[in-house]
Image: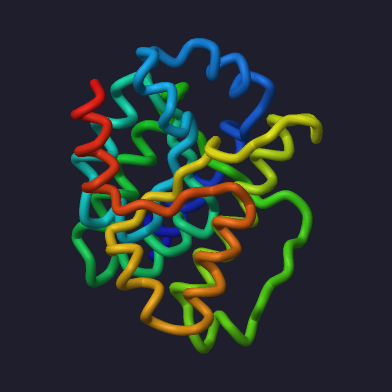
Amino acid sequence: MAEEEARRNRLMRDMAQLRLQLEVSQLEGSLQQPKAQSSMSPYLVPDTAALCQHLNLIRQLAGSGCFIIIIPRTVIDGLDRLKKENAGARDGIRFLESEFRKGNRYIRCQKEAGKSFERDKLKRQDIEAWQLYKMVDSCRQLTVSQSNGDEDTAGMVTILTDHQVEELCTRSAAMKAAIQAAGSAGMELKNIVEFYRQWKEIG
């Protein structure tokens, strides 16, 4: 337990050092995107399931130099919850720890700034919808910090999920509302395998 706690504290410390700063906007300029690919979001935000199931795809997207991968705190918490019974979650944690330690410029942890609306009741009733709301909150802070309030931020962020978006919409009213909240904030929700295939076709 003590070792696990120390590892978690180390991860939190690494994450704290890698807060999104002005460097992120400089990074945007360094993204190696051919013209056709510039139609794809520069920021990709994988959910917990995408990290557990498709770590190999995330590794390739992160290693391409074409995108900045943003890991919200709620995704780290999700991996942490699953690590005892899910080998993919343990692999995801190890991968993130290693990338944060190396200081990979293309993988960034997004800390929660300020106190967002917690939706505690929803957390008990529908944890997946609650997590999506938390991811949207994190991404909204990111787009606001990048746009200085006077630029259209639509299309800047794509949230990557292991699920089919149409199937997610039918799960619950809360999930449908969370997906609509992402759309209203100018973010796209996409299945990670489909996004990866599209990127490869363009590239």
